[in-house]
Image (cartoon, rainbow, N blue to C red; front, side, top):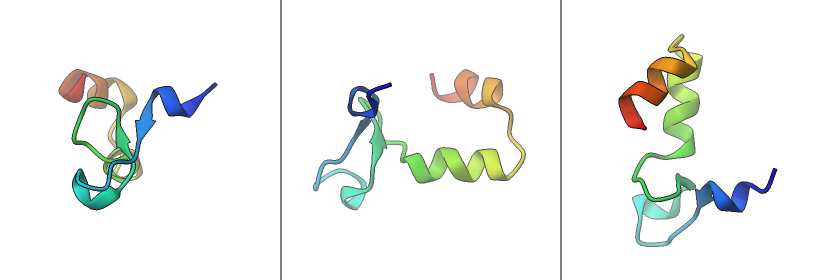
Length: 48
């Protein structure tokens, strides 16, 4: 899988942190939700 199609890094967006393409949610945010016990389906329903 080519993650460049999913994850972008733009200096002016969220301080240059890796984000989900086309959104302002960071990869770190997603990982935090998963670590906190949120299910993948819940994350998808909220953000996608």
